[in-house]
Amino acid sequence: MVAYACPVCRTNRTRFEVICKIAREIHKDPDTGENTYIAPELETISRSGKPEIDVKCLNCGYTGNESLFAKAALR
Ligand SMILES: [Zn+2]
Picture (cartoon, rainbow, N blue to C red):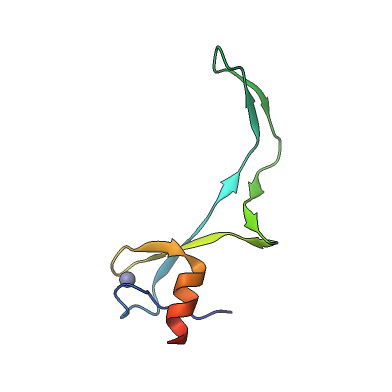
């Protein structure tokens, strides 16, 4: 596992929320706005194979990409 630290308030290293983005493909009728297709599967959005995760600091409320929190923990 990766340690996190908040890059903004810097005091929080323990309390976070992780936010996973979920995508679902839909097709729309451009005139009526009606959905003509909805994919049966929800997909986790991933960048280079890893799911893209945002982290929220429960101390100051800052939300940013997981890598920012992981980097802040190394300092
Ligand atoms: Zn914070």
